[in-house]
Image (cartoon, rainbow, N blue to C red; front, side, top):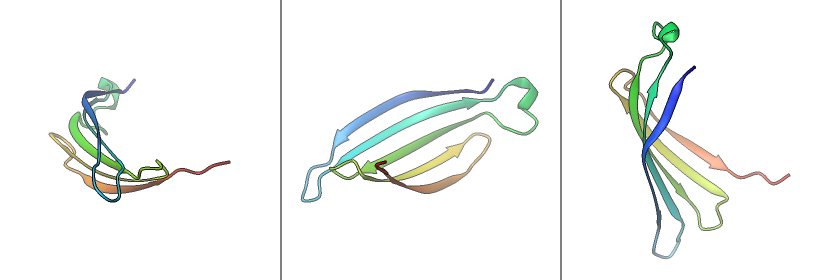
Length: 80
């Protein structure tokens, strides 16, 4: 079983003409011993900026100590 948990989280309102929310968190990811040959233990950080209607978001993240990856993810809420 993979252990992935948040170490710290923060949610703040974005003030200004566009408004919105900023969610930030740091995390630790530790794979099972059996999976350690394909997945490395690592720490990471992510910030997600949401619009004030919570319909769109843009996340930026990075990892270190084992993976050293980074990226951007665009989010869109879909109503069914």
